Length: 208
Image 1 (tube, rainbow, N blue to C red):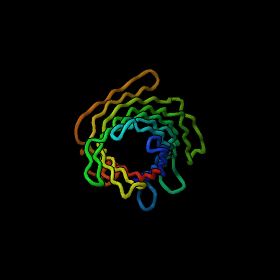
Image 2 (cartoon, rainbow, N blue to C red; image 1 turned 90 degrees about the vertical axis):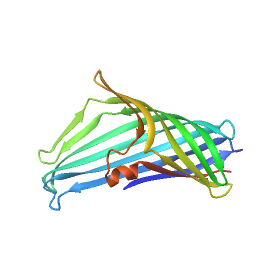
Image 3 (cartoon, helix red, strand yellow; image 1 turned 180 degrees about the vertical axis):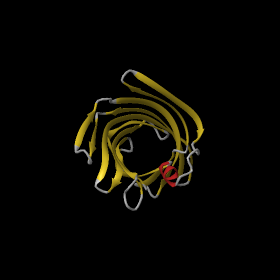
Image 4 (cartoon, rainbow, N blue to C red; image 1 turned 45 degrees about the horizontal axis):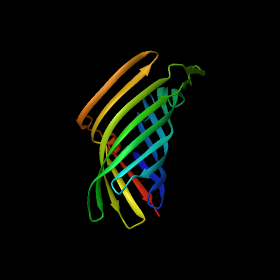
């Protein structure tokens, strides 16, 4: 399942915003006897600092840490290889409230992402060998995603990011080699349950 729970966001005079989100993603895809398959767990912690320029525009920065842990089974529960892959993330953003109707607000958010994929570590349970992977990677990206905010009252509200629709550009660099990606449209290529759950992010806010 994909879990996107935002921490409380506090606003001073409805201008400054402090908050963030916690994300966790886990897949379990192996045979019952663990002869083949793998499991993956990904955890992300992203605090946020923002400022309302007016009632329509907000600017801010998200920054945080993430870790992906993957285990590939090699013929049994006690025979596997695992990889730990930590990363640092920085995401300046600009939000614009497009329209408001009663308690609903439709917004559009531009996000610039810098991800530093740090040195990973691999362990082989069969050979009992640990290896440090030196090929750290840097990823830079820009994307624009729509979203919706629902205000329960003057203090509590909820954000829904619709990541299924986006415009994006990204570049990844590893050991001097670079790869570029860009796109505009609807991300519906992967029809698995995992992909659909990860296409939406939910956040809860508290302001005073």
